[in-house]
Image 1 (cartoon, rainbow, N blue to C red):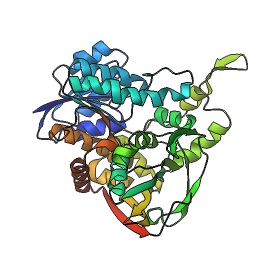
Image 2 (cartoon, helix red, strand yellow):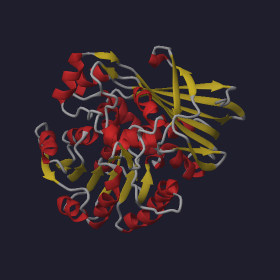
Image 3 (cartoon, rainbow, N blue to C red):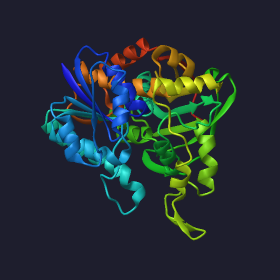
Image 4 (spheres, one colour):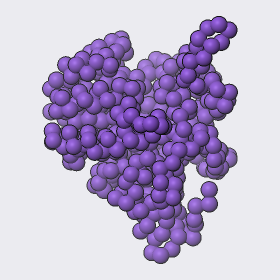
Length: 418
C-alpha cells in the first residue's frame, strides 16, 4: 500500500488527490497546501485524505509532512519546485512534477537558466534519485505530459523524424470573465517569457505570440484557428532526447491559441506583463502584479464550477494535436494525431470537474497511477517523453478508460511547410 503526498491543492492538485482516493493500492493521501482551508476542502471530498498546512518555501516543513511517503507529487508554482525536489531526496521518496523546477541554474544570460536547469535535473538530480533507488519525473500534466506521450506515439509510426508540431487550442469560454481555467500566475508567466523551440538541431528562443500558423480542425467546428509561439517544455525535452526517443528529430515546436492567448497578447505588447518595477504617478508598481491581481482564480470546487456552468457557457471546444513529419519506408509522411476528451459540461457531469481539471489533472494522475502500480521502473530523473513503449501504451489505455482518446491519420507524401 502506498502513501502519497500532493503538494498544492489547486485545480490540478485537487484532481490528483481525488483520483488517488479511488486507487486500491493507496492507503493515505496527504493533501498539503499553504492555505489549510484549500487542503481541507479537498479532503472533504475524499475518504483517505489528510489535510496538512505546508509552506513550500520551507524544505524542512515539506520533509516533516512527507515522512513515510512513497511518492511526492508537486503541483505548486515553479518557484517551489527545487524545495519539493530536495525534500523528496531527503525522505527517499519518488517525485512527480507537473512542470519543471526553476532557479536551479544561474547563467550569465537569465534566459538560459531554465535550459541549463533541465540539464542539471537530468544529470545531477538524476544521479541523486538513482542513488536513492527512486524515480523522479517532470512535465506530467496535459501539456507537457499527455502531449509528450502523444508525441512518442506519433513518432513511433515513423522510421525517421524531421519535425514535430505540438499544438494546443483552448476554446472553452464562459459568460463569466474567466480567461484561465488553471493558475493565472502560471499562465501569465508563460505568456511573458520567450518561447522555446528546437530548430535545425539546436535549442533556440523565440518571441511570444510570434510565427503564427493556421489550422482547420473538425474538433473546432472546421473554423480556422491561429496558434502562436508560446513558452512550454515540450520542444526542450524533444531537443535533449531527439536521438534517443524521437528518431533524430531536427525540429520541434509548441504552438498555442485560444481564449488565453487572445486575452494576454495585448497586455504583453503594451508592456503590462513586465515583471520589472516601474514608477507610475509617484508610486512604484510591477505591471505584471497589477494585471494578475485583476484576473480571477480558476475554479476548484464542484460548487464553483457548477455556478459558472449555470451562468452559461459561450463555447465548449478545444484541440490537442501532435503532427509528426518524417519518413516511413522511404516515403515522406505526416502522422496527424488528435486527442478527444470531455468538454466542460461533460467533464462536470462525469467527475464534477472543469474540462481543464479533467484533462490536465487526470492526465497528470495517469503518471501517478504508473507509480502506485509499480510500473515506473526507471531510476533517476526523466521527463514525460522518456517513458518506455510499454508505459506509453499503458498510459494511453488508462486514458481511454477516462474517455481521453486519440485518432491517428497517416498522410503519405506530406512534408512540413510551416
